[in-house]
Image 1: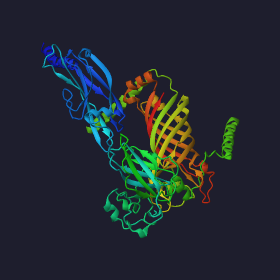
Image 2 (image 1 turned 90 degrees about the vertical axis):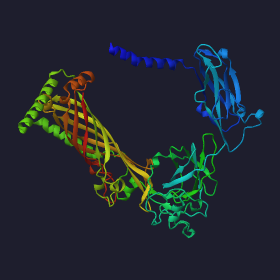
Image 3 (image 1 turned 30 degrees about the vertical axis):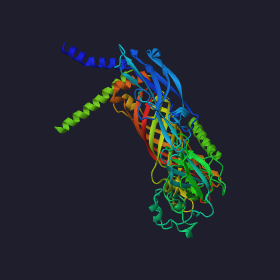
Amino acid sequence: MLRSTLFLLLLSPAVALAQVTTSVSGLSLTVPETDKVFRDCSHSVTVTWAANVQGLACSDLLLWSTTATTCGDKPANGDIPYRSIPQAELTSRRTNTFPVAVSGLPGFNATDGGSCGVQGVELQFRLCGAYTHSTLNCDTNSPVVHVADAPVLTYDTLPPPVPEIAQVNALDRALSVSVNSTGASVIHIEVRRAPAAEPTPDAGGTAGPDDGGSSLDAGNPSDAGALADAGDPGDGGTLLDAGLLLDAGDPSDAGQIADAGNVTDAGSLADAGAAPVDSGEEFKERVSFTPEVSFGRVTDLENGVTYEIRAIAEDGAGNRSAPSASVFAAPVQTDGFFSIYRKAGGGEQGGCSAIPGSTFTLLALWAASRVARKRTR
Amino acid sequence: MTRTSLLLTFASVVAFSGIASAEALSRQETPKTAAFEFKLGGYKPLMDDAPGLTDPKPYQTTFGAGAMLLLELETDYQLWQKIGSLGVGFSIGYAEKYGAALVTKTGQPAGERTSLKVLPLHLMGVYRFDYAALNYILPLVPYVKAGLVYTPWWMEKGGHVEYFEGVRAVGGRWGYSGTLGLSLMLDFLEPRLARDFDSDMGVNHSYFFAEYVHENVNNFGLGGSSATGSTGLDLSSRRWMFGLTLEY
């Protein structure tokens, strides 16, 4: 008896909760993720509304957009209303779509004196909706059903912050570039041959006392200054040791400092597949990668030639930042394991190494003789 | 008293395993024709010891003293089963090792990686002495394997196959191998589970094993062309492998 009572006591709140959950009226507005951020005034967004009316709808469903951070119960001054859904149509579960033109959003509408096309701004708009309902009788106290989690549209013509080249690794006929950025969805790497006045890295130079094997932080002037050779124009052409890592900080220091030693998994980097960069021409975009990848690999470069590298960030709306400070680096010839092995005297020539015919013949003859001897016993 | 207790405990464990083995024996086994092995071990090719190589030794210089982790899958087909089983087996493995490439002019570590990758293939004869494990209380199965080895290899730099003086760093080396191993039959630990494993899945016995592999993979010391006397890449090794066998 006691057990039954306990069971009922435990069960009843769960049942009540289930009833409440299923009897709540709701309203949702949905916008495709790809349509939420834009910079084009001719852009139009298709919004899907869905109403789940439990009981009676006591008003029309109002739909509007606002620049306010909250929606409220109905459109306020300055908000842009869209067509309302008549109360009579709000029965049970209803859903439909309506278009929202960017040029008609609050502040962009000709009637409120604004116009779309402002550059260098990031404006947010909320899409709102509301209706009142009651489970029994509609009156002035009937509760309002708001949009759960109102979608936010972003008009974005503000370029992302200028990225910063954190590190450049000199590879064999290639460079790998890592970039620090905020707010970017894509990083573009542009490359060109360095103008003649820029110092030429010397892959065969001797490491200075500060070239001990750790990478330098990009943008840290103290790092640049700490290197004895930095900034000395007379050292042009011999400043870089091995061309492995370059400081990416102050543009004036670019190309003057190097540090050997950091190892990067070049195989995991995005490959650039464009034509070789020609001498003395404009920057060419050679590789693009997402910030998650963090490295871009520019290939088909010439060893020993100094290249000027810069990064550009692009955000989700397609805005491009100004180019980063330039970094100078030169690819260097490297030896992989096969070269190391061969230079150590290894005689391997590759290929499938078919067993020399004489060896197999000898083995076959030996096996045959053993079998023959066994049979004669 | 303590010694007596220990002896009694040992005796009961032996008796239990004997009973378990007897129980395992008493059942109707499904036919047993093959075995599958999964094994892991450290593979360090003896290439630095090959004749004709100068110091510094290339493997040591590039990859250090560590071995490669070799994963192998093997399947054996049993041709004869009386006192033990005799069969033929084939295995395929894979191992890779990464290190920093070196800047040509300075010899310093470069900003890209280089790797050695091997895919050892074995064709071998296998003899397992499982008579004692199947008929007596001793759950240990010694075995030997011997056969031919062919090891395709390739070397990469910066994620691509490397070239040196026009030679592509891809090839294969022949050799031979011999293996001594010892398996621990696991059936006595859970006889009923082992019986169900057989009746449901057809797996007669399962084993943990350790084996010592002695293999010479250097094209039998022939071939190669080097002024230093090197006969090419030596992928020979002496290694321990550990794994699990399923006999079915």
